[in-house]
Amino acid sequence: MIQYLTNEQIDRTRWDAAVSASDGPSLYATSWYLDLVSPDWSGLCTADYSAVMPLTHRTKNGIAYLYQPPFTQQAGVFGKNITTDLAKAFLKAIPHRFRFAEIMLNETNSLQVQGVEMLTNITLQLGRDLTEIEKGYNDNTRRNIKKAIQSHVSMHKGFDIDAIITLFKNNKGEAIGQSDNWYSVLKTVAYQLRHRGLANTYSAVNEQNEIIAGILAVESGSRMILLFSGSGSEAREKGAMHFLVHSILADCCNTHQIFDFEGSNQENLARFYLGFGGKKIAYPFVRINRLPLCMRWMKRKGISV
Image 1 (cartoon, helix red, strand yellow):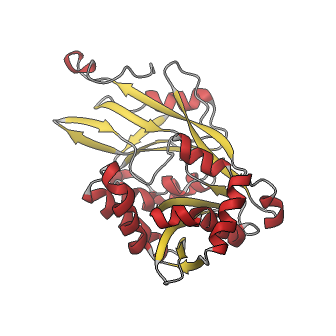
Image 2 (cartoon, helix red, strand yellow):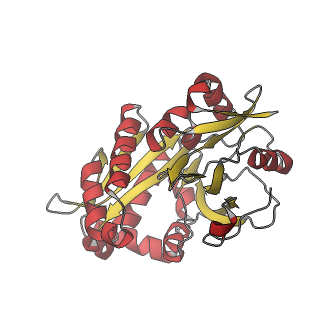
């Protein structure tokens, strides 16, 4: 039996144990991480906590809905041997007070339901020497790494998150149009991850000792995740981002099993990630539309569960 629990009713120790023991354990589904990105989250779980599903929600114009919080690429059902039927049962158990939902499940959630969209993540197998990983680099990746070295770009591993956020804001943030709250959540997440010993930044520094690009890399079990990055025109000219990813791979190739690029469905970004030998992994995106008939047309039709 699947039950709905409010934030206060959830046994966090049992919840986190279920996430940790699942076939696809994820930082994003841990109780403390959910507290950072969606403080009022609730959840679905089986009576014995063998399977759990976070529900991150908001209310707009009096209508409660589920959404995907920032810096949380995948959510969905976590546990061992999550079958298609069990994943579907969890979706059916979402309380009807949530009239609309747009949420990502995770790559272990097989869901054969009409209307499900498949999104793309890109990962790279680690647990091997850098020389083996480099064999998967394409020519463009090799050229850009060489260009960065010839341009005397160096790497600093530390915690330069504020400088990296500034780079992002000045070069990409305006076009994307993120809110002040989005940046506030990013800073909170970054500093909390750092406090827990799970995050570092890798910064590309030019000859004038200026940071021209940076990546926030986060540990999630045996996985290293590229959670956030920022760069400018100088970084593009000097191949700094290729150089930084290469530097991270050199740092974690023998200590972790998977490098997670966190995407991408954007063609240019996917091409960049695939240039390191990454492989595409599909995960489901579901939309549930239970809005009143007079409003349902405003949103696309969802899946039937």
